[in-house]
Image (cartoon, rainbow, N blue to C red; front, top):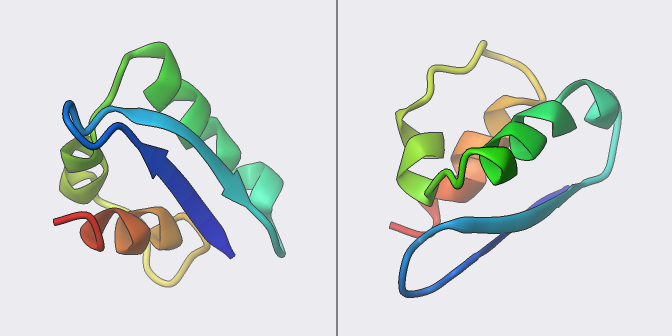
Length: 65
């Protein structure tokens, strides 16, 4: 399960939760996004390895568009 919290106006990522197999290998992407004030568009523009748990971040980000 992947959940991303986004500011509705600025589209900046405010936080995220990832639960499941290999979640600890992916959460660093969210940590970096918080550090650099990334937007949801930044996640949809990233290239993720397929298939992987990291791809769930992109899938969730696409739901905001």
